[in-house]
Amino acid sequence: MRVCVIGAGLSGLAVAHALNDRGIEFDCLEQAPDVGGIWRQPQAGERGPGYLSLHLNTAKQLTAYADYPMPDSYPLYPRHSDVAAYLRSFAEWAGVLDRVELRTEVVSVRQDAVGTWTVVSRDAEGSEVRRRFDHVIVSSGHHREPSLPDPLPPGTESFAGTVLHSIDYRDGSDFAGRRVVVVGLGASAVDIAADLSRHAARTVLSVRRGLHIVPKQLYGKSLDEIAEAPWWNEMSLAEKRDWVEQALLVSRGKLSDYGLPEPDHPVFSSAVTISDEILSRIRHGAVTPRPDIASFDGGRVHFTDGTCEEADAVVYCTGFRMSFPFLPDGCPAGPDGAVKLYKRVVAPGTPGLYFVGLVRPVGAITRLVEAQAQWVTRIIEGGVALPPAEVMHEEITAYLDDIVRRYGRTQGASIQVDVGPYSADLREVLSV
Image (tube, rainbow, N blue to C red):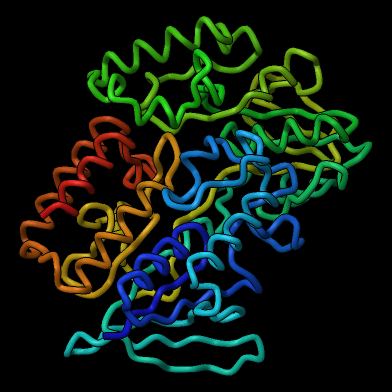
């Protein structure tokens, strides 16, 4: 029995640990020069979703692996370099560091007629290797291809300044003394705008649509601690929304008071933005909110409310397209863009293919990833039998129907999960 694990970030290391504990042979292939995923990229100066001001948005005790706590010396929300060091330390402690093949890019993953998987990888020198496996576990994350507005605003091609995506942003000091427009209101947008505001001559935050901005703690409790609390998970969705919206009014008032658009949807109907900083930076005059960009004219950026700004750079923090270029088209996302996985892990119709970490919770992901890894390990061992494909498809359809009712057909919604209910779901399948 041979297993291929793709990726050695937080999810891939959890999988490697689970397999190693059960004595299952595996190869773990990692494209980067070291383990740690996006958390090691900023310090290494590599292109990726990370940046030097990146910190955890989830508390360290729940972001750490269950049997390997983060050091007491770490703050509640460690910075990226601390997390990277912790992940490498975990890999050493778990005895899997030497099992990771670094600087190894997965080029192709294909299944033959008898169900065996052929994985083609390429090393740093460009040499390709073909290997055969019984199972493939994809844990490489999904922040791969930067997404930009389509079409871009008129005049973009003649803009006198620099246009870049957040994937190419590293540090605010790179923009010292410059006038910068940041586009977006997600996690990277507010982090980057706050970071820039300490270096740039002027920082403008261009926002097309209002999102709920939530501090890392409410009533002194981290959001991920709340998400796992029994009292929280006993409430209905309507009760949760009312509780959070009331807490937000107490903690920060209305977003329109900051010059930001009010959300056009209730909380938990779209991804929330977690930030302790951005509203403070706006209130201190360090970040200036503006609406969507209408057009560019030389070195000027025009907004939909008729205002304009002189700018030297525009940073689009507009997210990423989910991409697994080494897999066949349509796996795991279908033509409509929705990810179709049983229990958000198993690909029906392609036995032996699993995804770990392809979820987006409000709260820490680590416990979910560990449970997914343990479940997949049991499936591989034969201790758990999957239901027939038609039953798996029924579960997927019911889940996606619920997602559409709650979030609409928005990009990335199909990987959204609630920590409490999803944890209970995984505990149930693990107990079978």
